[in-house]
Length: 330
Length: 245
Ligand SMILES: Nc1ncnc2c1ncn2[C@@H]1O[C@H](COP(=O)(O)OP(=O)(O)OP(=O)(O)O)[C@@H](O)[C@H]1O
Ligand SMILES: [Mg+2]
Image (cartoon, rainbow over all chains, first blue to last red; front, side, top):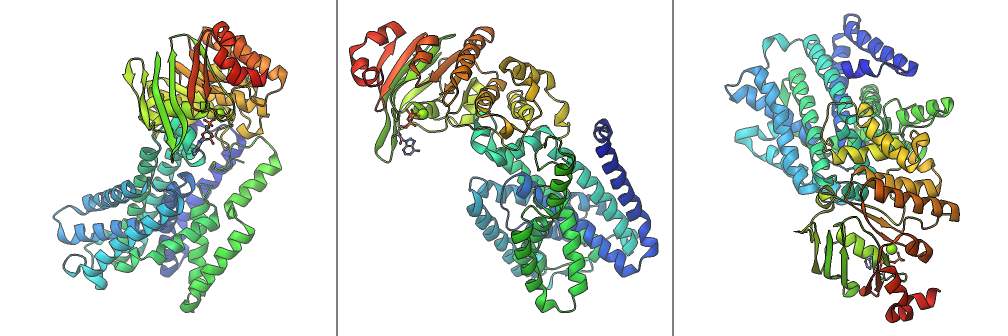
């Protein structure tokens, strides 16, 4: 918090901070006025926002192309489920350990992929991710195979939807704050420098592969946190969490919101989920809708919605731009 | 300080560097000259680890650095600027230099301090030295070409190198910019105690600041020595100076 308060200078920053506070307050009180189903949906929006933001650590900020991010979400969810059901660990420890399992898987996949560039990186993450999906899908004795795992032993206090909601609100807010701090730390600035000019980074002494690998592991970790929140809400998991189409949807969320902005991915996640709910009745057409959204973004908003808004704001005030990829750079 | 011996670099059989020899003493300003395509940039890329030599050795401060990765070589004290402008386009002038200093001080893995407040003094010191302090908060790509070339050098200075490699530091600059850049390089060499190795096509620049010159032709070192000796070297005159002067 002190870092945030420390930079409490510019009035624009103040306005932004007030806005965030207002949103947080609203999110805190709103469940009282909403149906159970709406609170459930809001919880989904919360952890999906975290998931999309975690993807953006390696995508927008790290310049990598992880085509299969939901593997880490799925692994986190499965790890939480298995630890809760089969290990003697206290539930709290299971919740804490699960994202570490995701980070571990990200470390392995990242170590294999991080030397590859662009689409090669993407195809490799996709291939290995699908391999993980296949293992989860086939390994009946351990993962329950295509049945998934139901009746996960989530502690009773968390069984109500509003409990899941408040846990998600707290955890997601905390994680977003941590990610924001990381992205504005020397590590984060260097990560963006690696994205923009890897060769130059090497010659100023940055180990670019190690840097990207660390970012990839962080991104896997936070996806795993989102997976734990999913388990708390649903108390069941299935292999479809790790299927590639989930990752495709996630990528569209990030692109829609804007991958060179901090809040873009969360915004994109919210919009897509809301769309999905309103159009959900006709599920066969959902992929068609997603495809259309993607085409529209590429044609009209390549920088994403939040990217577009930020551009307008900074053009309006015409102060020197501090790099389009900074949160609230305008 | 730097010893290059029998260095060879082959690109699929094409020998871009073919037996380069170079000795740079501590505190010296040394120039590498040669016609286009002689292999000067390739030689620099080999020294800084961006390319791996096919044969030969490179020693820096009595240690063999042949084939080490660029970031390791950088931390040993060699830093460089590039012939073509190679900066961080989305960062400000200030941040371009700051990130280099952070890397040098091994703060690059720090995840929890706001970057804004780090290495501010150090960054301004370097920007002040090269004359970019007043443009610190402009986006790097908004600078004029000449200033971007200077920023290129400032980024390298952020690494506090012992040996600074400058690949055509004044290429494309106006005569005035060239003159002030030469002055700057001289100042830096004395005030920072830098050893400087540079390439340059402008022979006035070369003979103006170099204490030693190495001449390359088709990847080969054809002469190495004091400027006066190079001027009178028959081989050099035939191969290089003859066609330019
Ligand atoms: N990556 C590469 N692959 C193949 N050939 C290369 C490569 N890099 C350089 N060359 C070739 O090696 C030769 C030497 O190039 P280099 O850039 O080192 O010359 P230079 O002396 O720096 O020239 P200039 O004065 O034009 O900058 C050239 O013929 C060039 O085409
Ligand atoms: Mg060159």
